Structures are given as C-alpha cells and as structure tokens.
Length: 220
Image (cartoon, rainbow, N blue to C red; front, side):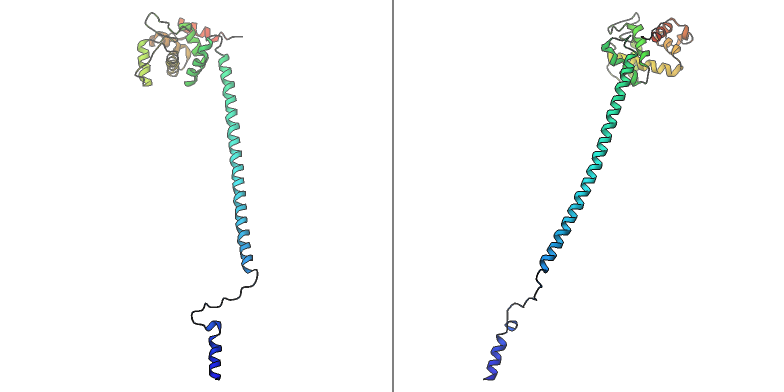
C-alpha cells in the first residue's frame, strides 16, 4: 500500500510526466521591457545621428551651391560690363545690327574689335552684298581665293562670303593671322589689302593709313 502511494505521487510531479514540456525558468519582472527600451533608445540615437549628418551635408551642399551661383552671377556681370565697354569702342563705326557679330568675331581670335570695325568700315561701309573689282565680297571684302583658303583652314566644305557671320569670322581670323606673322598692324593691314608685296610699305601704304585713321578716330 505504501509503495502504490509513492508511485502515484512520483507520476503526478509535472517534471516527470513523459512528453510534458520542461518548466521555464522564472524571469524577473521588467527584464524584457528594459532590453526592448535599450534597443529603442539605440535606434533613436542612430536615427538622430543620421539626421544630423544629413543636415550637415545638406548645409554644406547649400553653401557650395550658393557660392557657385554667386560666382556665376559675378562673371555674368563682369562679362556684361566688358561687352558694354567693347560695344562703346565700335558703336560709332558699326551699325547696331552688326555690332554683336563684330564683337563675337573679334573675341573669338582675341582681337581688338575696333580694328575689325575699322577694316569693315573702310572695306564695305557695312554693305554685306558689296562686291569689289576683283570679286572681293561681303563686309570684309574677302577675295574668293582667300575665302577658299580660309575655308580649308576651318574645314568648311560649303560657305557663303555674303553671310555676315561667315565673312566677319573669316576676316577677323585673317587679320589675326597676318598680325601674328608680321608682328605689327601697319604691315598686316597692307598685306590684307595688297598682298605680301605690300608688306614692305607698311605704314606708308595708302590703305593702311586709311584704316588707321578710322581706327584712331575715337568717338568722344
């Protein structure tokens, strides 16, 4: 009888029932909650640092963009002022519609626009369909053979000497090349009009005198 009671008591213990889940250890109250809070706080700190980093980078990007914009505007103002000054040097010689073209052609080859304006004034009086006795054409009165040679230098298969942009560009380039070759304007101008044989006359060449007179006759 004693043996039976003991066996029943043993089987009735939860830890000894076959197939029953093992008992879980008791967890102190608040343990899971505290670990979760730590993770939340850590996540929030990371998010804050990321936001601060993004804000700092954004401020730096904004500062850099603002500096670029300010420099761009400064250069635009400077370019406008220089353009206005350059225009004032040719407005007494060149009709208004041709002034931007003269400035562009001269600027392309780092030339004084006043010289291009003086040559154009003497050559054609700004009549873009002008044709000389030797077939010289357009505003800068370029000979067909010279135009063909310049077009070859520019890599142009087709061109129109009566087109103001083409003519002024070719004329300004030719003047630039001659000035670089001879080192002075009197000889360069003489050759522009009379060919290489006129180089020796330089300042005494009538065409040179005429162009330089127009060039030096600055508006008040």
